[in-house]
Image (cartoon, rainbow, N blue to C red):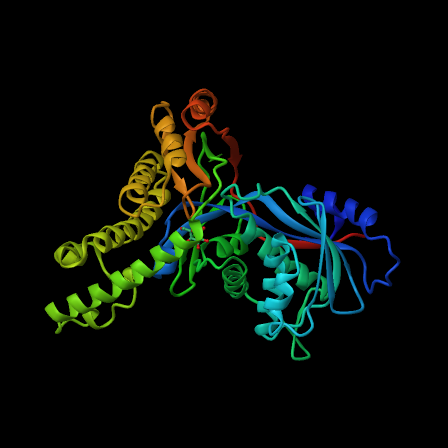
Length: 426
Ligand code: GLA
């Protein structure tokens, strides 16, 4: 963890400079000023597998959400958002029982922050009050999980302004990255009403430069894999399409998966009662592709397509791990196209804009793979592209996307970067 101002990331420095200008009302702060940050993420593969107890393979990117400010003598948290040019204020006293009440009286962007403070309190942690500027360079709503970055940065800010330690019942305590991720996942659920899995928050918490991370979303175990792809770029293309209906559709997919797992459990138990695995099917993660093949026809058609996608995707994640270890990026690209087809045809979470970007990418030589990324219904695609093909892809998108969709797409190149951090300004 960084501990001097030389280590400040640029967005944290910018937020710190704003802090001096915005908070000028003469409060007697209790400590020095400092900044905390956490990265956004891309997910190489493993989409909609997290809430099925499955596997994901994300990496943290070189874009962060950041807080810069100072601890207060009371339990008030006062915030100024650079993005929204707006103040928000709440108290960490009385949480979580007055979460709903406070949530109703603050702007939407601040609800994620309030939710993290509320979930930390629920976990027995007592965050200090602070004043802070909230900023960063994760594109908002652009598919790199700006909300997860904000949540994890909130947990970091609470740690920073509590003097680098969380205080639990009067004792200091350290939270492990996956504990912070789980707290932030629950915060996302109560702030957004989306019953999300742990992918985004875990990816932000676990970021390491030059590494992707394989996460087992059931056991919370994780393993780093080198993500050094010489001559290749990870290109994120934002559709700029707003995600209408995403909340209800996401929660509906989750329910369908749970129902499919329950039915498959019953079916497999009825056919193979002597097998131990037949007694232990709790989620789609527990059904192998071979078992699914045997019993898929017993499922209603819609659930068959949903479950088939998820079971296939878990297998693709594990295949990608082997391919990454062998630096077989062309084959990884093939899996990305397959994931997109599954999300589009069987899981049905794509949309015209995402499909258009993938179709455009498909015709550019040197694009190894492309797929929609994240929850779907908007957001962005992730593209594995040879460095010498990035310009051609950019040109193809600029020429074709606006005429086919009426929208402008934006293109970003990402690197695998480090996780959350904080530093005092000295
Ligand atoms: C969203 C959710 C994640 C995950 C993805 C799909 O980003 O927040 O938990 O389910 O969708 O993989």
